[in-house]
Image (cartoon, rainbow, N blue to C red):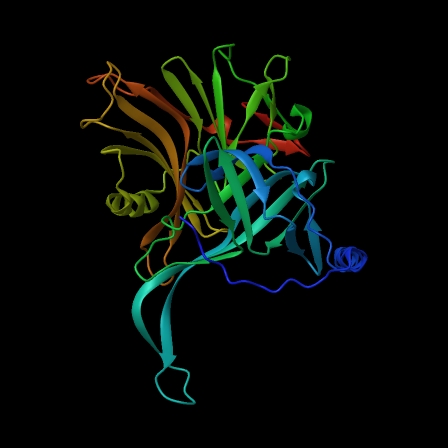
Length: 365
């Protein structure tokens, strides 16, 4: 189809003048440098993982307010980005009942608010924390591409929960050397630990999964740095799992969690609370849960019933004992045949009491 375009009268052009003008514009407004995308993965607070080539908007940089300083970084300098909930709360819209009075009148349903702290690990080993300016990452995988937005504050809608406000908890890049990405050491004193044993760890707070690999020495593992945070540790050998957990039985906390569990229903229809833990300093409650699927699934194979050993993180609603689920992640997962049971789980105080000296952690003593 022929498209009729308006005719523009052609005027004689001086090529030298055009070239000079172009050079002047290039000097005043240089084109943004094209930064190469880097292979990596993004982990989210709901356990979802996205992998592919990660890049920033052309010409942009990571900008972080760290103390009184604003730092701008190119992505190629970054080894890892971690985001954690610095503060979480349920808020409501309100107004003063009368002008000049302090009494408030609340309206509508509560809505969740989350303030996010960002920690950046650089390729040279330096790390710093602060609040990130809103940043868009692009992740390309095969023929698909998607945007992932990093925020320093999330505000949900009325009636929404903290758990439903998904956010990235960890962005890691494949280009970093193994020695750079595994910057901590775990020394484990545990009878029966063998080459077929599997280890799993989740940090407190954002419940980020830590990667553990044997160092070559008996009972020693290289580990992703938990950045000084305590973490949950578990060992799986065959059909037996031992999870580090405190021995105290907090019946009141257990009752709170049991009451709140029906409000966090998901794909798993059978869930057993194995232990609870209150962290008064952070205002959080953790629950160790063995979740399994007893009903039908779409898996057409002998093993069709998934299970997970998970940790739930709860927040207490201000002014009440009601719990709000703020996040969850799994230590181990698997699939069994109908009628079979998930591995037995045993709680261990020895795996709970971790000691650390710098980036060297010791457990099992």
